[in-house]
Length: 481
Image (cartoon, helix red, strand yellow):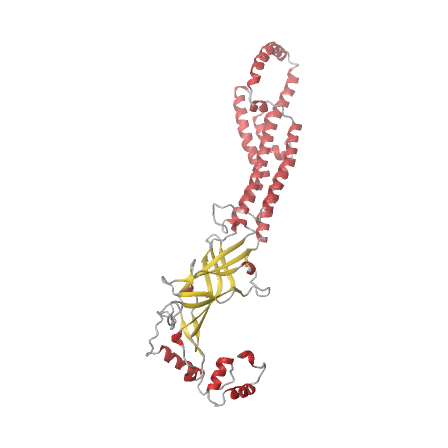
């Protein structure tokens, strides 16, 4: 009927129209005008306060048989229809470790209670009033649907109390606002820190024998998500286009999608991890004879240079052990520090924000893979140190000593005796050559400084190449991780 009226009419013009429609001039004209056309130009003799007090006394007074525990089922029907509208206002908190999400929501419910109807003509013209409404029977004046969150950490009963608005035809509108906390599975966490987390808020009746037929009043509504309303300095932001609300049987499933701000983690974890890993490969550019690779080993070698006599073999043994330990510490200081920084940085930044799970996380694959590359680089440095100090330097030292001792007559006679025994030893060696293992052949390989430099060169080429390939595969597979 409202569409039939011309727009922008004054109260006097509307009164003329209604007077022609109701020629008897009774109050029915004004009441019907308010009900059918939302016409509010009427002036009633009874005030709104007096009218609403009269309605309260009539419906819920001492003489009323109204019960807040009885469902207002329509006559000859087994279910009551109730509509639900859910609105999003703000993200309060997301705790990935605890698996919870807290949102500030608006939950509007509408239903019809025939026991709350009244005739506005009999009470002075008020068409709606408010009643206390709550799940707690001690705090409510009217019946409300037993509606709550299934995967709740906090119940809808914890929301602030709100009045329900009741119209003269018995329609009830109950709108509540507050923080709702739910338990979440957080699908999408495996892509951290480029993840989009999804969390479902599932609502339904809490009655053992539900007789309420819930339906959706409209789509999921978002407030505070426009550019000038959005909350700043938050780690997560809701993605409205990827959020939804669906009715599954008697369950209302509201799924929210949140996108993480990944810039912080790029600067604190991803980039430092890649940088320090590549920095580790710089050890391949250092010559094995420079101080950075040689310092501790040289000091250990000088400490053993005065060892003579029967203690020589013992000191050589301790020299090898001590050299290995000191050189390992040296490499940790120079190269392995990158590994430590990667491990410590990733552990500190993610220990409080990520749960311990059996599922793989993208960030864990990145940091662990980088650690393995760094550890291999340190292992190669240890191998180079072993080859240089155990294989190359002793051979060079023995050559120098042999050239000086050739001038010694006693040494010459000793060498002559050894030459006579050499053919017999060569025959014995020939018989055992076929039985030498691969490890023995490698151990007998004649290492030189130039060969060690070639090994470093190829490691410097291969390690960054394979690490770059690892990063390419990791980032390209992020979408389907």
